[in-house]
Image (tube, rainbow, N blue to C red; front, side, top):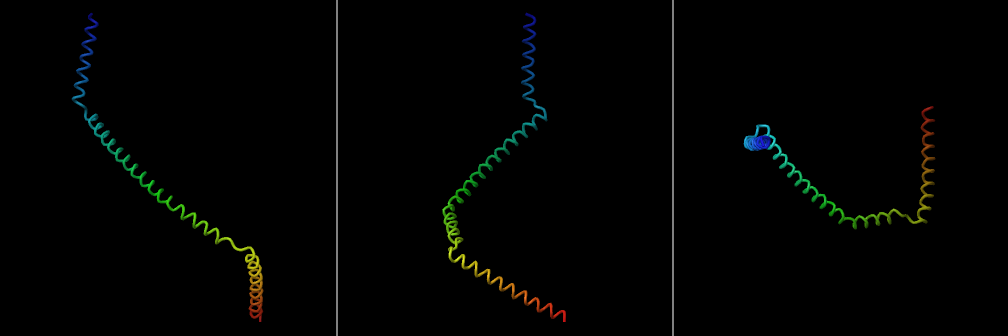
Length: 120
């Protein structure tokens, strides 16, 4: 029985200490609780801002999706304009080759005249 009484006394004294400790928190514990509260508030603000950012990104994506039909139309137009007729392509290519070779010959002849004039 003596051991039961001792256990009860020690349990009651622990309970008293815990209650006293809850009432009188140390400076460290007070500061810790204040900082934890401040951190929790900041996390809430971060969460609210992330949600706002998410909504903005969804709006931007929605606006971009509205232009998909316009983009497809312009792509189709570009594809049509990029294609040249087969007959016109062959004749233009030959004409450009001949014009370039004649232009190069004229430039080479002109250079020859300048170099011979320098030598004289």
